[in-house]
Image (cartoon, rainbow, N blue to C red; front, side, top):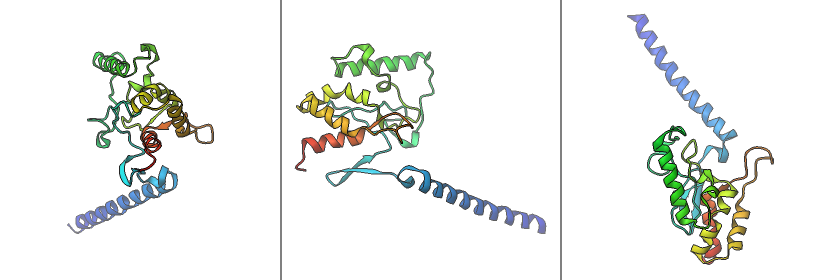
Amino acid sequence: MKTLLKSVKITLALCVLLALCYLFILWIFAQLAGPDNGNVKVVCLDGKVVGASNVGQNFTKDIYFWGRPSSAGKGYDATASGGSNKGVADKEYLATIEARIDTFLVHHPYLSRSEVPAEMVTGSGSGLDPDITPTCAYVQVKRVANARGLREMAVKGIVNRMIERPLLGLFGPPKINVLKLNIALEEAQHPEK
C-alpha cells in the first residue's frame, strides 16, 4: 500500500510538472516564432474593436470586399475551425459550390462564370482564412466602387496599397487581409471620423 501511494504521488507530481512545462514551452515558442508574439491582433475603427486580423469576417454587403467562404460551423466560428472534408465528387459539396458561384455572379454581373475565382467559392482548410489574393480583390473592385459611389481607380489604388508581399519575396503568395482592406476603404471614404 505504501508503494501504491508513493506511485500515485509521483504520477500526479509528474503530470502537473510536465503539463506546466509543456504549456510553458508552447508559450515560449509562440512568443519567438508566432506572428504578433502569439497574440491576437485586434483591428479598430473609430476607437472600437471590429475584429481580429487573423480570423476571417463575414462580409456580405456590396460596399465591402468579401473574403473566402467559411466551412467552420456558422460563419467564421473559431471554435469550429476546419474544412468541410468533402471531396470534389460529393454532390452536396458541388451543389454548394454552384450556389456560391450563382450568388457571386448575381453581385458581379460583369463577370462570366469562368472568371469567378475558385478561391471565392471554396473554403480554406481552416475555414477561417482572413486573406484573399489580389486577383480576388480586383474582380470585386467594380462592385465595391459602384456600391460606394467611388471611382474604380480610387478603389483599385486602395487594394494595391493593402497587398502584403511574400516574406523575403519568396515565402507564400501575395495576399490582402479583407478586414484591413475594408477598414482602409471606410477610412478613405470617411476621413473625418
